[in-house]
Amino acid sequence: MQKLHLALALILAAGTSVTANATNWLQLQGTEPAGSTDRFNLWGFIQPEYDYTANSKLPAGPWAGQKAVFNQIAPDLKSSSTFNIRRARVGVRGANVPIDSKTNYFLLLEAGNNGITKYGDSAVAATDASVTLNHIQHARIRVGEFKYPGEEEGLQAIHVFNYINFTAVTDQLLLERFFDGDGSNTQDENKPTGFGAFRDIGVQVFDWFDWLGFEHTYAAMIGNGNGLNRTDDNNNKDYYLYWASEKVFGDSTGPQREGWKLLAWYQKGERTLKYVNGDNDKQDFDRKRWGLGTTYRKGKWRAAAEYVDADGMVLNGTDGGAVPGSLNNAETQVASFNVSPDGKANGYYLDLGYKVLPKLELDLRYDYLDRVKNIAADEREFTNWTIGAQWFFNKKTRALLNYEIRDAKAPNFASSAPPNQILDETDNRASVQILAIF
Amino acid sequence: MPIFTKSSTWLPALACLALSSQLWAAPAEKPFAEKKVVLQISDDDASKQTLVLNVASNLIKHYGPDRVDVEIVAFGSGLRLLFADNSNAGRIDSLAENSGVRFSACMNTMQKVTQNLGYEPKLDANAAPVDAGVVRILDLVSDGYVLIKP
Image 1 (cartoon, chains in turn blue, red):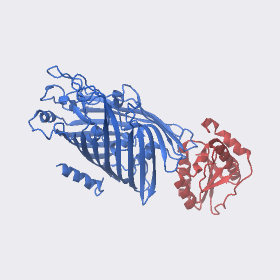
Image 2: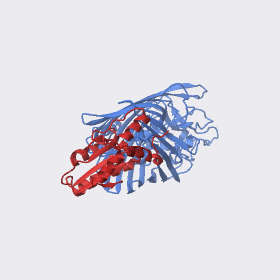
Image 3: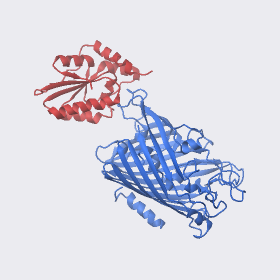
Image 4: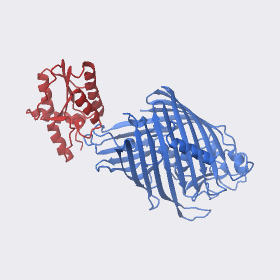
């Protein structure tokens, strides 16, 4: 089955089918149009939403009868039916001296309720604070906090994201939560101490150029590898490499540019855990990620396919599928977030969208994740289908409706074993979101 | 220290006004033009760049390239429209080559910009230097051009 999934991904990756946004995100997010940028452009967006699952309880294990973490709505994990302000961001960007195009800046603040504010322990947090220096030909330099070059689903501007929730592969392998321990302390919930949001603090060198009818973009970056708004917690830096080649169709520009893009990326770093394998034993672990992808947009069609491979520091669910912090029925253990420091994983997604009406787009996405595939007892497989619709009220306002058919299993256990009994209770999820950009 | 602020855009304009001699003589006017228009861009609002180019395009589209003579004069913070690296360079090329729209760049502003930036920005190949943008406008108005400041 896994081979079939991969084959489907490769067929789409080959560009033989209608395929998502083909846009140069490094250019759009890191630079301003030369000679035509204001000193101060105020902008932002708001995403109120409602999410619902059937709130099926854990059927087995030490937390049987309690809430299942995967049926609660993030980031608070307290409810299965809730309104939330997923994101509320306001920012400024521009050229500090308009007549000089060589220096650009970008500042964006988050006031919504999500991992950035919850795990950052702050009601408002900076997601981006960067300066781009365009002084060296073919080597623009961006310094500060910003999205690192990488997977398309994470790198794209979130206000043009075609779905409400990320794919399992992006959420669990790339939307990094930072921990002090691996979760083996039975008396601690191992709450994340930081959040990545696909961003890092560091220095990036990048540029783009036309060659053989394609627009080629490269980027190399070095960063703390320690999430948002924090200094490094060790002296080991993260390294990022990125390449994209895009056939741009016609004269379209901006986040909805028409084209066909191929991309590849790699990142490597180390993470420090202070509590490992039930012991106060400070250790560094490698964290590597790489991926390939393609995106396509033309006329009414858009599509994307990406593959992601992970080695080290892989999220490993929660104890018994329980909500972190909850006590087991025997009152001997606190459920915690878990990390597999040496775990390996891979996954992919296929995404297709079609505008059936000028104001209505229908979307379909399939995603697959094989988590901790190198440790039989911990291996979990996630497969999700997302059916979506987007109604465009105008150019900057839309409503998104998603229904996710979610499935998870522990492939190395019998279907009647407790891990599979628990995972079988994974509910489908319905979400509605309004997005307004200003 | 900002080079230009909205409140100080009159400074380079005034400086341009102080100069009267022309560095550049305008190319021959269109002999069959029924309308003659000079468009002014002199502030740093980026959206004005698009607007002034749109107005030029619309004039050409409405009257036809032979029936309307359009010149865009840039000075003050508006001069950056005519910098070589401006993101609108493609449109400027097209208007100049296909529609005969002329572009004039104030050299007095250029001098001030060079002083402030520490280097001389490269001008668009379609930009013709004039000593003073405002003087160029006055001369064109004297010659029967209608001044429009979008």
